[in-house]
Image 1 (cartoon, one colour):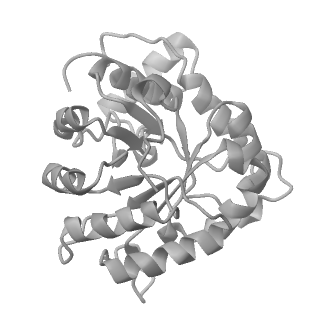
Image 2: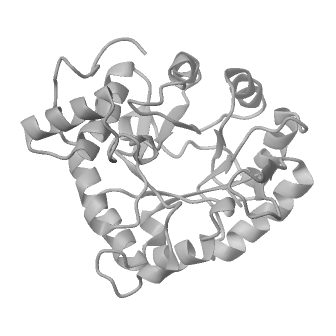
Length: 283
């Protein structure tokens, strides 16, 4: 099977939906029912849905997307595994070809699909050269088990080495007003034609919680001026910076609530400019 990009810069997905917090207890709640959330996302034009082996919810995602499979770009990840302690910081990376081949079978079985549209290496490995991992991922693509290859939590050097083995569709990294470490990577992504999927555009909630930092205070003031929420203002910043960067960017806010999903969709259309927030400028 040959390689065909999932999208081009001219038909870039407007926004994705991160499903890390997608949980089974929402059934029957109109704001948190998994099938209602997916249906609402698709109807609103948000069809790029993102999960991972590590999240432990692929079976739930599979059930929720079943009625919409032909209208969903399904993304999942492999390579990060929890340790026995259960602590949040107890995890390791396994990116060798044998682990990959075992992982994809589990992904497909749990999601109840024949193909995953965009399959990511979830985190760079210190043990397995990325060329070995991507060569094995390309084998999955040729066999029809995935449609495109993505990388997450990697370096510029990783990206160039991986792309030399096989074209990379997307790199997923955090990008928000409070976390801008990805910006030095963006010229290389633009050069190689790789989309940045910008996860955690609300800074893992740090931009919209109870913090009273100068940045969050400014967000509140700007949001009030335009009659929107601080969350929408922070997400609008990622959309606008992406459009002005010359780099394909798909923001990936995560939520398990329909009300938050609809607010995020509305944020993609906001036209906000305020000199106190760095809306433009080089990246």
